[in-house]
Amino acid sequence: MRLASRVAVGAAIVLAGTARLLAHDPGLSVLDIRIEQRQIVAVLSLAGADAAIVGGRDGFSNLTHDALQLSLDGRRISPSTTFVWSDESGSLHVRILYDRPSGSRLVLRSTIMSHLARGHRELLSIRAPDGAVLSERMLDASSDETATDISAVAATSSSAGRFLLLGVEHILTGYDHLLFLAGVLVVLRGWRDVVQTITAFTVAHSITLALATTGLLLIPGRIVEPLIAASIVYVGIENLMRDVQGSRWKLTFCFGLVHGLGFATVLRDLGIGTNGQAIALPLASFNAGVEIGQMAVALLLVPVFWWLGARPASRLRFAAAWSVMVIAAGSYWLVERIV
Image (cartoon, rainbow, N blue to C red):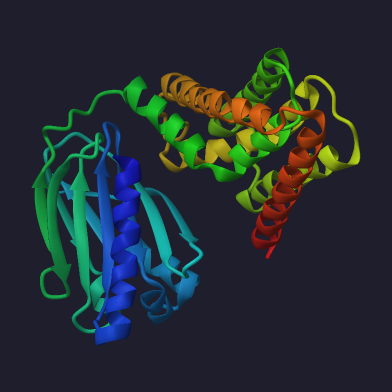
């Protein structure tokens, strides 16, 4: 459901931009509110043209402090964490986390429309943890407030199943992590080597995932993300430069420590490990989900690799061609993340 929600947000932003070009539409932003058991997660998204109106990333970051006002049973809720990012289309997004006190009547007021073009609208969706829609409506500058009963979402601890699915989803949509593994696996010729290599990667990213989520090891994303891209480039180059035999567990363990820092971003963005939230169950469940996703991909990819490289000559050609593709993709991400 989280994936479907993201797709819907992206589609709405694209449609908003297209409408503006064709019919001078005043714009459409998207506000997605998810009611968690211990917190409320708000994600506000603006199309590129609207992002320019509010002054780009810096202006948007300053604006979001007061653009969204939440209260529960009459008590104002202040944000605990705010994170702003942009995507390839130039759209801006902000994720705002709120600690959730006890209460049932949530009142939300969004003032972003007053800072944008006249007639700008905002699609608001309020959802339960499983993605079920509790309330949905269109806001504008003259009607910027709504109230919703959230008592049906009990304030209990987060479920293991939810974080397990989150881990599976994250690895299946983490194309850089998957490409790294694919670059390593393409030269392996036995299931024992495959299992050893993936296990080493899992152990390593589990260590840094735990350290980063608990706040004991905090490295900025602007450093971690280029390092992940660099690990992809390195694997591809190593495939071409030397004859790799047997398990590559030492390589995947070293780079797995870096990839674990990338995985931790998801849990940190959800507030896990901050504000006294329980960490053991979400961390273990999320990590198990990542492992399940990795093994599923390996079980699909490895037989295909072996079939394509059934003969020694074709094996070398395929591994080389695949490695060149890995280097190209990793280099693109590396430059993109540095610039």
